[in-house]
Image 1 (cartoon, rainbow, N blue to C red):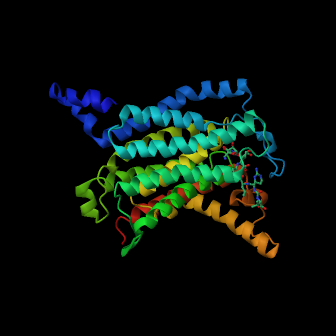
Image 2: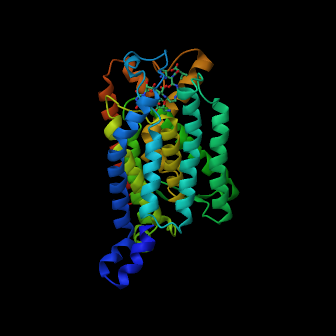
Image 3: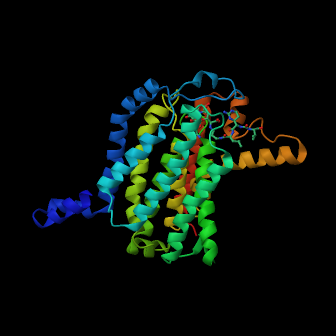
Length: 357
Ligand code: 57M
């Protein structure tokens, strides 16, 4: 919004020129989201406490989780709010990708909100049925995928490190997009089981895609780097910047020992947003590296369930994998920080694909 009101003033004073630059708006989108989170966080946590919106910890948990009972949850509401305000202030709202990003983020958030609400407020055990949740996630992702397809979005998929390998998926790009978005949304949800475990890699992944959005959206740079140029997608670095700021602000309160959890409203929406960023920047396959922690968490569940069904034996002491390390006796902060370190290494590896191909 500031872009509309302040950039035209450049004819009176050159200082207003800064509002046209994506880099400037990205930085301030992140700063705005961070400051808003700091300001709203304590008020929101107090409100949740007063309303008794506290986590109901399952009984089948590694010891230590019992003391988390009653921790305020649904902190994702504040993340969503802060991202939207920041994008509204700093984004170019005539950009269609910004609206599609907002649609997926809010759509997934709404599904998570209804699930959290039924669990925490209505005290319905287990919340929304898994298949109902999955169905609506697919609907949200499908709407975005179909809009993209009818807007003639490039359906070619490239593979990291392999310059000459390209697949044109044609109409199959639609289900592919749905898989990426819904997969990312659920993988982040599965990861969100220790304090700061999901939000840390989310900051790192969103920051990586913030960089990629800027690069692929810039004709000169993308030509220089020989990466696919995606017109208008540069604006998404402002969106990703807001995600980084809001996630950092949330980590302030979610770090061990957590004062608040994000709930499904946070994990489903942030995961969906990350998947959408991967699609819009045409770096879909790169998400396996950038979001490697989320991928491993989801794979650990798939392996555990498959192995148990087929052989009756477990691969991990407990899935998702962070519970395995808990049961092995690693203290919670050690698991969390080590996962963050791996996430940083993966982000660096992903960035290196710009040169190693
Ligand atoms: C989300 N949610 C946390 C919080 C958070 C198929 C199966 C593997 C599914 C999986 C599952 O349900 N995962 C979904 C996991 C929960 O956190 C809430 O949920 C939100 C995210 N959706 O924001 O509101 C608990 O996680 C802990 N937590 C923190 N700090 C945080 O910042 O400590 C969360 C955020 C919180 C808190 O204790 O209550 C969750 O784990 O429930 N199911 C599982 O993960 C279960 N695994 C399992 O049953 N494994 C089996 C099979 C099925 C694979 C096996 O290995 O044999 C585990 N869940 C829990 N304990 N709680 C089992 C042990």
